[in-house]
Length: 205
View 1: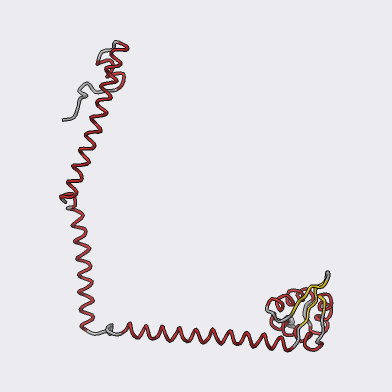
View 2 (view 1 turned 60 degrees about the vertical axis):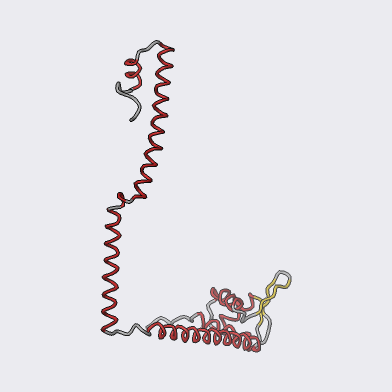
């Protein structure tokens, strides 16, 4: 024997709305939790969630009085809510149709001049060949970049700056050696050995 299928959420919502429409009364949660399972077959554990979903969708009104919440919904409110929802959906549908028409026109406009003809096919091949040629030329250009006069001039400037810096450090080394000689009476070979200075250390030409 097959197991009886439970109610879907939408079926529970519909049945719960029937409670309000049929009675036209105001209820507390505890009242709905008693009525819904008995008269509409809604599982007791789901009553609160179903009721809250109707409140969230503005199908059922809820007002707190003292420490209790009261719930009600009259047919006129449900009708107004449905009409409002219908108007909103119709507006969205209309906007979607307009966007579709605009896009369709843009597509048709973009197709003009792009028909698959022999001439267009030939031009596309030529364009691809030119793009490949440009890529190759850019690669070749990079190879010969070191011969660029501007690059060479920039390198010369950098060399001058570097040479000046080397000269300054050479000055500093000779100054330290001179001070060390006077302070400790060391000779050149001993100072060079102590500080790892080559014997032929001198200014660059």
